[in-house]
Length: 518
Image 1 (cartoon, helix red, strand yellow):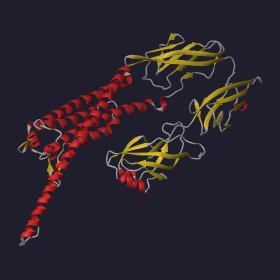
Image 2 (image 1 turned 45 degrees about the vertical axis):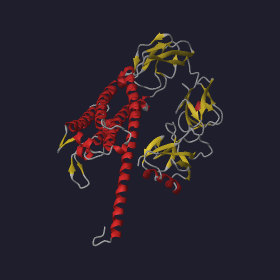
Image 3 (image 1 turned 90 degrees about the horizontal axis):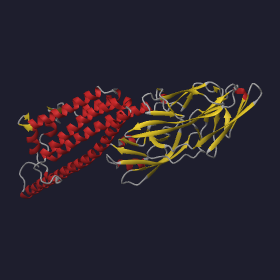
Image 4 (image 1 turned 120 degrees about the vertical axis):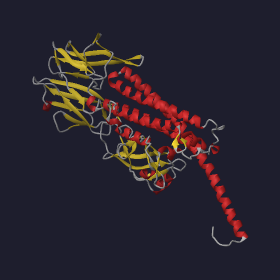
């Protein structure tokens, strides 16, 4: 207010301003207290959900460790160490929250939880930490140190490097700088002279950090193992003979595997043609028995695996040919046991004992390409395509063979950003405004380029905006500016086509859901 002599009227106006400002401050304080209370409710609910998810993953990992110890036993032991530390620390924080709110009659009336005495007397004793405060500080430091040590000594160290850094940051208790740039102990910086409800919310956030640490560790364990499992170096055909054909009177030699070449995946039992196979090598049952008569011979049996308390039986039903002389073509799909509509599928065709220039192959949409035995086929309508192969033997005889392949459509693409992020992701608004929306065929065997000409975007509480092109337009950016952290923004109804083959109608593109982070 201005200095000097003031009239009685001006003094009254100034007094009214002071009262009005004080009333605003009181009302804002209540709103802030309620906001912290509502935030604590959300954190508590989220922690329960995260705990349930983590518990289910821990249980699944323990079951896998029992069923497949070579693959999951060490991972399970590492996970149990962090689980025990997390349970102990989480229970300790629950006790701290109970002690702080012991005298609060209505724990949902957040506006009454504005006092600072509870936190001050619980954590501090004069200029020093109270026994309770020191115990709390020691617990935070102990959890950080022991979790970092457990992850450093874990089996899959590389997967945990980023998590170790996050744990150190989340549970950092080093001195903090105030707004004035003064160094202050972490405990006083976070808990001295704070309203009770903010302290409770702060403790709930630490519990959320514990759940996040567990979830990241479990995700790294499972994801690392899955990447190892699905590596293409682990895959082979189901029936692998040592030679392309077996002569009459010889023993058939080969190996049967479960599609994936995995030495750690050991069956409980393998039965082939009524006999148990005990020679298991690199995850496959090694076969060595008389080949049988000329012609097609069956291999029937089952792989038996233990999964939890039950047995899983996977049937084996295959055939092999015994020949006295070349009498059939060998046909294999270079990509899969199917051909896809809308793309050029590479096919390799050969016939034992017959040169490539003496082989003729015919099928709708098939043509010869460069290389010995190489063909390309682009199937049309229908569910199957029949490839007819005729070879001329050195004796002058002709041998004809037919093979049917299933025809499949290209699977539905997924809306994506940054070339590889699809499904449900997290992203700041500032980044989403700039990204280019595309579409990908996740895990598809062919590398196809997908062109996008438009899409729709939906922000919670705002009308759907249609966009032409691949980047957000002005209307979409305005709608996005209204999104709040935690909102789920959906990109859907993506208009897409195959580059160079706009005549093929792709299936409906799957949506992309983005959780706004800030």
